[in-house]
Length: 79
Image (cartoon, rainbow, N blue to C red):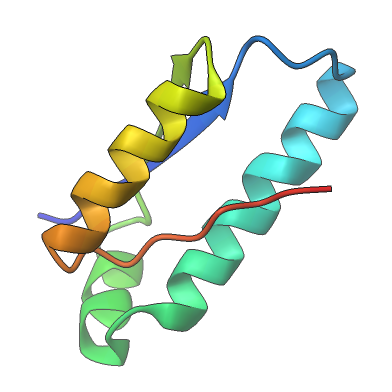
């Protein structure tokens, strides 16, 4: 079973709509970078997603680096 985890910073002042758009950008761009066979399987399984929160840029970057080291497709959204 595959699951996409999206990490959202809570220290940034964003409207609910802006948060939703940023989450969507992260999801789509991570999929574009991922292995097509894995994305197909994930899609067939219902495209399970989980959004988790961090309260700082430092914590987000720490998770991002961990994901990259494990070769997990990831994407940072920034404005």
